[in-house]
Length: 111
Length: 89
Length: 169
Image 1 (tube, chains in turn yellow, blue, purple):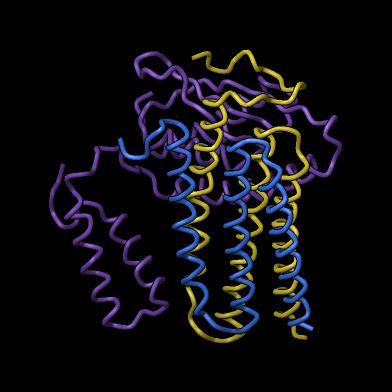
Image 2 (tube, chains in turn cyan, brown, purple):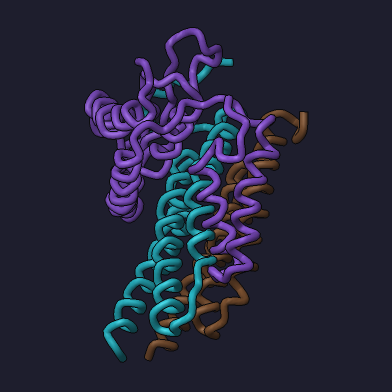
């Protein structure tokens, strides 16, 4: 196994770990507002590192030009905040209950 | 050795997908299920990316790109529907 | 607003790059169609464009993007620490961030960065009518000290954005 393959393996394992942690956060955290943090952050970074590994693999290991993964990463990094924003707006609109030790609940919009 | 790592990575992502399915079933309400679905499509993109490396073809990346676009648009459309009761006003 | 073919150089360059990336090649024919599309699409969609504050300092924009990338990595480690800890030790909270920015484009970028970085998700712009001073409602995963969080967000993200877009405030 060459050095490049070690680096690729590390990046892939790191990415898989982040993806898994995002899903674990989704299952484990107590209310919707905290659950939202898992997928928007951990999964996005996990995918970013998988994309990096895949780009390194095709461009350096296979010696072929491959840029589509860059588009995937770009698109996900732009769309993840928008999705999170829409989802939390839905939650506020439906007045989902935040877990009891949440601070600052009096600041939520009343209408 | 490298293909072994790839198989391990794919199994981890499949496990993450199973966990997402579990939270999709558990709910407890529509917004949570929507969040689980959203995570699920992102994870399926991750799976396609790793599978593309495993079989050494770039064919799957276009599919992943399409999943990314359609997943984002559909999530936002459902959000909009839940906010306003209508998608195009 | 200028209505020539070269009205939006940054957008045209981005379109060309996306087109070449989509085809995985920089062959002459693809470059040619790419240039054609990169000029035609902004020109055809000029009627839909709303006037936005222009980017004044590209170097600073690049530095801002790199800083955000670094912050995403750091933020993830923090989120993972919280996720792996017990649920009872977690202190989530809602925070109102007072805003100096008023234009839609810098505000969108600010909300997006806040979503991707230190354990915060931007939720809503309050109050909804734009003539009063506005606040951004945030949800924070692990809220230690509200005042220092607000100061850090303003100093780290809002001030560079103000400089990049050369806003009047």
